[in-house]
Image (cartoon, rainbow, N blue to C red; front, side, top):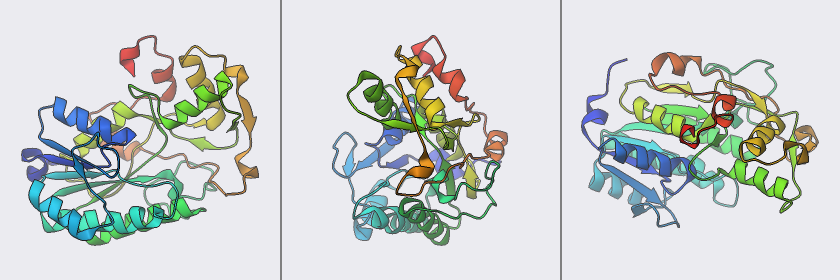
Length: 288
């Protein structure tokens, strides 16, 4: 795959750079010597305040920064603004990136699928979200691809193993410590991906001309319960203290098996993407 001259020679803009993935993207880009700008909404750990729902503000920032590449990670998982951020906001970022000639990587989710296929989902499998979050992210994907002909939509899964615990990891630590009474789904399969691996892969993809939809998640499917037990053990806690639950019994429907087939991404990339056991059973913190 040929490198994108624009993305390779100019700086990078990371939306949602105060978030778990965004912070890592910004740090890795800067460590590699790239000019990098990050946006935030309410958390000033990033450089610039930006509400992606404000189309004029998005366009103004793009005109001022003039990035060669944009990695759009800003999203919401719930709340009154979820659809506006995940669909309208994504459209605003994509349209502005297209107008200013920037490469665009847009982050999406395995929750665009219904979890009923009984095999890992490929990029050409039809999405069928079963809840409002998945539907809002699918609408965002479609808006991005319509607004930016060269955009790459990257679907991923549970992100973990940063310098600080991810939200999924904090839930486990709260449960094993007794701070929270939580159950972990034994019937829900995902493809967890280490934060550092995903960020490095996304920055590599920003240099390529790949467009359309690409799945990029971990190579080792696990249930949410199995994932939680691995996290507990990694932090020296007793995995047997974790309580099992059933996703199928929840009031809000969730996809039960949305494992992603990321083989296309693995063929494209030089960046290694490790399985969850290789990451969480490592004896060296640096491996995270």
